[in-house]
Image 1 (spheres, rainbow, N blue to C red):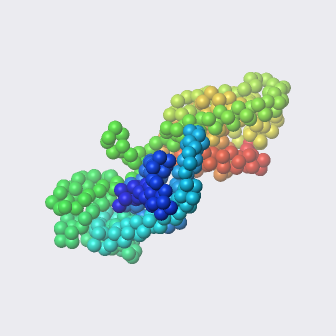
Image 2 (tube, helix red, strand yellow):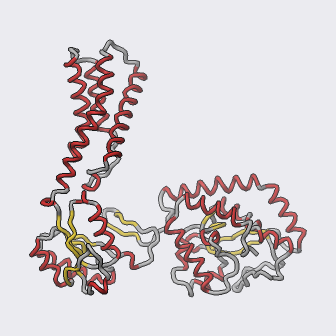
Image 3 (cartoon, rainbow, N blue to C red):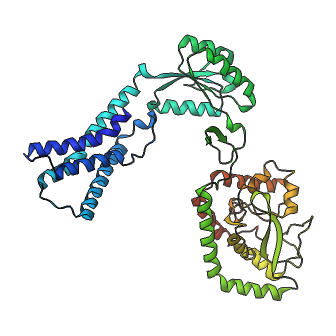
Length: 453
């Protein structure tokens, strides 16, 4: 069926052109042979935009019709471009060509719809359905069973689940059925001719998984292992293969491959633009800090960056002290160390502007988990589980935690825990769109943030 779906457009296009020549009494040679060859090759070579597999063979009607029409328009556009570039000009029957251009997409749509209806009937035929059983009831197995039931093109019928816990304890709801305990699975598979078994047990039960796989060798069922990876905190989880060996990523940076390039380009472009536009403001703040109190204009502090490596973060000095030791006292709302100019800058986060230089250096990003002082990192990594995972991405000038109100003093461990939760949520769901959303929310929040002090 997949083969027919691929070759039919070429056969229809060439066949119709030949048929029209015969109908109008035109000899099929020269120009028409060239046109038929090119249209057939383009019909075969143009990407179809759908991966192999039963679930993709049957598509909704409207996208299917639109896809066929768009592909034909692309083919005609390419043929016109070839004719224009080669300046191929001969006498030919325009009536044949125009009729062919108009009726071919209609016939293609009709033939494609008929083929897909045939596919649908075959895939939905009860006699062709593969019977499925699940070993293990958990979030993953429930989700997979539901998707199989919702997608009939998979040609699978879920018989039920096997688990050592009771249906009441599992909270099973119709149409899910508990068929027995795990020891009952193999005999049920043999008696009922089960075609596919999904073993969906937690990774902590790996010995039981191995035992089940060994017992299922005495059946003809296809066996798939679906690890319950939701038992652990996932960061950018995905499956794939590494040099031919299947692997499942449980914790990975969102900036792998081209994503890191996209992130870096956005950072450089926006940071450079802001520095150029805000140059007069930066100069004015430099003068104000210099006149406010004795000390350096730029405050430098060691913090943890990407992969937990130490970086030097720049800020306009807002206090009368410069702290960067094993013990650092966090700034509070009534902190007497803050200068008058410093209080104004901290209120509107202007003291953070020198970190644009950190962004250009590649040590920071515009958006990401806020970097903490080394002393605070060493303190909280012992108190908060998963604290160091936030360092799998470059730290940011602003972040998801900050636009959600988690900034300022962290007087309690719970305050820092809330900040870390947002940081890890950012790692799970990063996208360029999320970065732009956070930047816009930062611009709005900085004008009315009560925790900016």
